Image 1 (cartoon, rainbow, N blue to C red):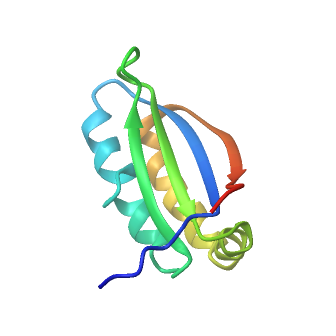
Image 2: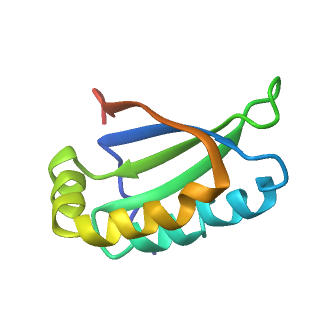
Length: 108
């Protein structure tokens, strides 16, 4: 039986893909895309979820779940060059991108 890992840290990003790039954006930023595969190098990464706004079809949020803030920050520091390289590759897909926040779970 697989052990369920509880997330304690969540990073949320908001994106607006360029017109015509929506499908490719969804592939790269989705739960099995390039970003999720990159984060999966660390056992402290739990999952990525990609969601789309029902009222604004080109507004997306990514939800990156981690076991802790420390694990996420350590991964980002350790893999900073790779992170920047992947980010540069994906820039051509989006018109807007902004981090909405970093959240800690208060209850188990």
